[in-house]
Image 1 (cartoon, one colour):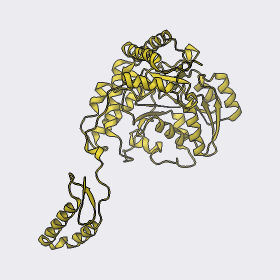
Image 2: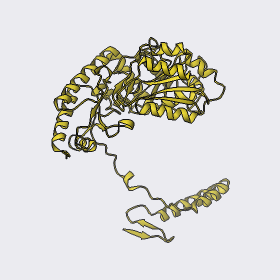
Image 3: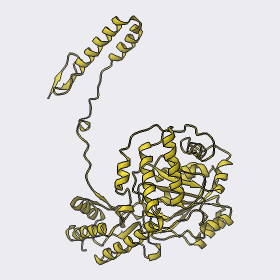
Image 4: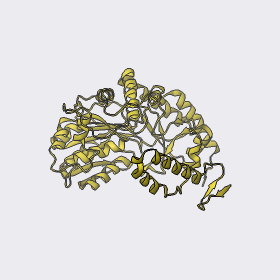
Length: 440
């Protein structure tokens, strides 16, 4: 129900009367003006402001408590938060230039160096998701006209090519059907033909469940005076990666997958070779926020006094620090082994249901994210919706080139367990029995 105030304004009768509120505020201003003549000019400004009316009422939805369902997140990310990481998000807020947050940032850098297996001084976290780290890398490494070779065997290679074009680079995508990876011979042919300054490869292609080999690719790139940029968002912590030993020049990952941290921060490291390319640019990067030289100073990577650059997501840094601490306590090798074992168990349960794995080569299957061929006669969305609605378990369909072709299942960090695989297998078994199927 509504009523009309003396200004002709309708309002719900059970909400504070906006006209009455305005009169009360005006009366207060008059009292203040009489009490202190020096406030007279300010009262005039306030009076002018009070001539405006509130035309947008408080949203009813925001007057109710926030409600979030409990779900098991077995999609390609984000993953469920580890309890210790969840607890970190409730810690007290401090300032982004306080010495204590600088200590947290330094510990995060050390954690990134550990999980990346690198000693690169230029190692930091970006305030944004893994996609933001990709853009940060490309905006700093590429200048207009630079030759850029892209392994595009899934959605992330296509995204990298898109960003490269926006920067003005000369982009040369190596298109490959979803489910495959790039051999050293294929990469060398691209290097010889296009003479790029940068090659992009996705270590763990989350849209298809493909694992890209990395041994020898850095050395090959360097023979052609090319830098190697690797996306490890979906693979980090679940698959061995050795940045320095494998000759990777720029490596990035995200917080929300195996690290079981909230989305919104990402991990990034530059080799000295890549740093030289950035620091000898002819032009400034196209983004102030993503300028790696400014970020390097802010993160204490250049041995210079830290200067303010932007306000970091402080609570997100707490969570990321705890995620890296959990990985350090567990040990990388133990984490790799756990994901490998969970993948093998999942594959056995899926094949027991008559489902077909999308990646044919067992050596090229990504342990963290498995792609399953949508079974004949089914609509993938029916299966995904059934598992969500009936069991509160998230899995997803394909993305980009794999859209409509696969179901994607993620076993990420603390979610990589036989118990979770069994829960999902039972849900999928029932979904295949209950979902409509076109038998033609």
